Amino acid sequence: MKILVTGATGFIGGAVARKLLQQGHQVVAMSQTEDAFAKLRAAGMTPVIGDFANPATLAAPVTEVDAVVSLASIGQIEGTPESFAKDRDAVAVMIEAAGDAGKPFICTSGSAIFGVFTKGEASPTIFDEDHPVPLPASVFAPPMAETPQPLIDGFGGSMAPRAETEKAVLNAVGVRGIVIRPGLVYGEGRGYDLPNLIALTKTHGAAPHLGTGGVRQGYVHVDDLVEVYALALERAPAGTMLHGVTDEIALGDLAVAVSRLVGAKGRTESLSLMEMYTRGGGRGVSLSVNKRLASDKTRKVLNWTPSRYDILEDAEHGSYAV
Image 1 (cartoon, rainbow, N blue to C red):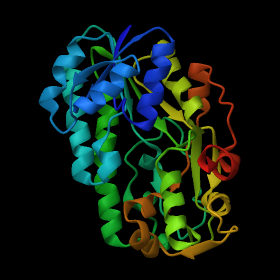
Image 2: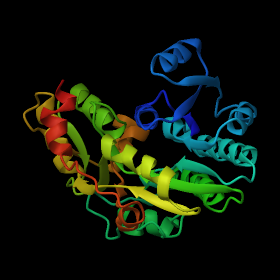
Image 3: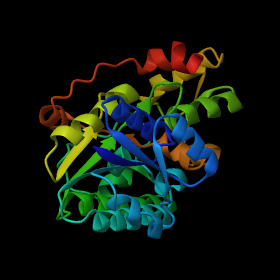
Image 4: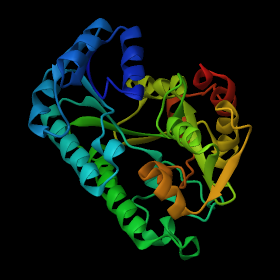
């Protein structure tokens, strides 16, 4: 197939694009700069101009392909309600441009849609693929968490348009709409939360964690995650929600591994939520929120069997140590 991949210059998008090329597909990769175009061509992809911040550029490329796999996200970068609304609007343009021929349309969301604040302990609920979103504030910020109101407003305001994006894809008429929510993605020495934790640890000489370090997040190795995308393209029915999550980890344990990685000898630092925010901004908040997702349905629908459970080993001795 001829497949449009948005976000192909990023960590996950690049890995997915390479997988699709290996499977014999033609990959059309959306980008904006000549430098990025050169890199995409060198990787065997066909570059095309497109920008989530300018939805008018998105329609034409969609009409020229057999399938869309979207991994671009302004919200993932900026983390604001306005940026997630831009994602929603961009995806809406692409869905409309896809027409009614039943093209596969895979959209990437994220595990933060089920983010739950605590004071550092694990939250009680593991959310499956069919749980309603967005979560109400009474669930994602229960009173005992004592979450500051500005953080509640910002988090809730960001997840509302993300949930709208998910629903638009799953309910779209004329395409085979599929949504994937990856967990904490690791591998190849890259990612989002894990490199951020490493950077904060290097800066302060100890790895930060919220409270007792009991906050839990689902994780997935990038190699296992790209299999979810490839299998979804092949097998997932229209309206399918998928969770790219292998297992869970306590972020206090991850902090110890990262501390050893950077030579801090396992030193960690217990911080409050506002201290995490002050130290890392949105990065600190992301490392303070429970993101607990089940993937039983995903494994059954796709016959997906992840094989990498080595996040601690990879963080301390593997790809991040290179």
